[in-house]
Amino acid sequence: MKNESSEKLLNAIGKNVAMAVQSLEIILPDVQDEKFKEYLSKLNYDYNIIMTEAQMLAKANDMELKMTNPIEKAELWTSIKLKTMMNKTTRQFATMIFLGTNMGIPDLVIAICDFGDASSEIVTLAKRLKEIEEKSDEDLKLFLCK
Image (cartoon, rainbow, N blue to C red; front, side):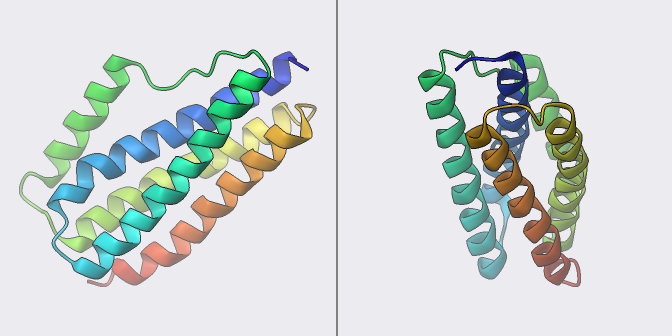
C-alpha cells in the first residue's frame, strides 16, 4: 500500500527520530545528574521504539526510510559539542533538548497536515511521536531549574 504521502510522512518521522536519538547519544555520556540521565535514557528508549516501528513500516510497505545523512550527523555533533564545551550542566542539556523537540513538534504537525492521507498506521505513529515530544517538553521544564 505504498503511496507518496505515506512515504513522505514516514520520512518526516524517520528524520525527526534520527536527530533525537543521535542528539541523546552525544549528550548522555556527559550527563552527571543521575535522575536526568535516567530520564534521557527512557526518552532515548521511547525514540528507538518509534524508529524501529518506522523501519518496520517502511520495509512492510516497500519504502525507503531516509534518515539523517553523514553531513547532518557531523553538523549535529559539532553543534552539541560546541554548545557544551564550557557548560555541561543539567540546565544546558535540558535546554538543548527542549529546543530540539520544539523544532520537531511543528515539523511533525505540518507533516501530519500535509500528508494526512498517509496510511492510518503511519499517521498514528506520527501522532505518537508528537505526543512523546510534547510530554518531553513538559518533563524537561523540571530540569531547566537545575
